[in-house]
Every structure is written in structure tokens, then in C-alpha cells.
Image (cartoon, rainbow, N blue to C red):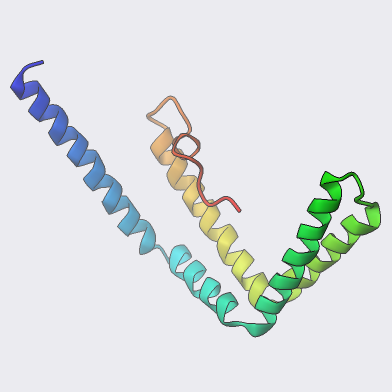
Length: 132
């Protein structure tokens, strides 16, 4: 490789990284992203939501341990599902999930636009996006 070729490759790398930063900034300016951040902050500030999240996580953890030892029952699974349903019924959590779904849909459209000229799913190859 010549010095000119090395310099051109380095410039191309810098251009791609700069475009990546611009894309990140543009995503942060999306209404869906701003709404998601707002709803996330509301969940974090809600004592009710935080208590239900903690309760759900405890029940889920107990279920996972019981499942690992082969002691989990259908009733245990129903208990996890009940706790999750109660959590999702809290208005602030429902709003958060709606905002998360809207953002996921928008980011999937961005992923498709990036992936189109490539022979791979960009989001999947980059380590995934917005997965719980």
C-alpha cells in the first residue's frame, strides 16, 4: 500500500465514524427517543413502579432458580405472569412500554436503511439493538 492509499483509507474510516456520531445525534433528536427518555425517567421516579419492578424481579428470580433445579411448577409460572401483568398495568409502565415499542420500530427502520446496501443485518452484526 502506498502512503496515499493509507491516508485515503484513514480518511474513509474517520468519515464513517463521523457519520456514526451524526446518526447517534440524529437518533437522540427523534421524537420517539425523547418520548422514550421522558417515560423512562417517569418510571424511575415512580415509587409505585419501582416497588412493582422490585417485586416482579424477586418473583422472577425465585422462579428461575426453581426452574434450574427442576422444582418450578405451572403455578410458579402463573405467579411470574401475574406479577408481570400487574407491573404492566401501572399507567407509567404502560406508557413506557408504548414509547419503547415506538422507538424500537423507528430504530428497526433505521437498521433496515443501513443494512440495505450491506449484505448483513447491521443491527444484529453490531451486537443488537434495544433488546430487553
